[in-house]
Image 1 (cartoon, rainbow, N blue to C red):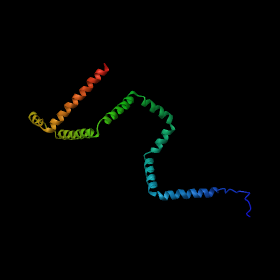
Image 2 (image 1 turned 180 degrees about the horizontal axis):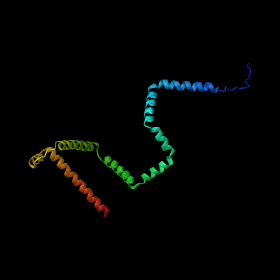
Image 3 (image 1 turned 60 degrees about the vertical axis):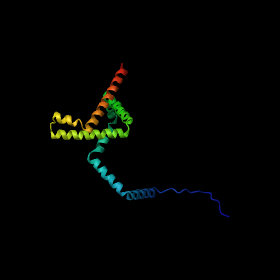
Length: 165
């Protein structure tokens, strides 16, 4: 029969061996990710050259004073208006169909291009030529759209005025 085990000895890891093992793991990970590590070092170098770390360190050292100044700026009425306007803008954009917004932005882009080219040329247009241009389908479509836009805007203004009374 086998002898019963009466004493259990635990293997105490050698700190030097553990450190060597950790260094080997780190070197293996660095070798496996060589390109990422080199890119990170290059990025860090660029950030150091523009003093990002120095600035961040100074901000962290003065974080209480910076926090107080930041909160004072956030509590300005203008910032409240910006935040409210931002929410209103997102609400407005959310109410539009993507196709409507795309059509509107394309029209604005084309209109601005034509407007800037006309302004660069500096050509004056006679009343007679403008009258002839008013007959083009593009101008008529734009004028109809603008009149509908103005009508809707006026309706919103009148409703807003009634709501405030």
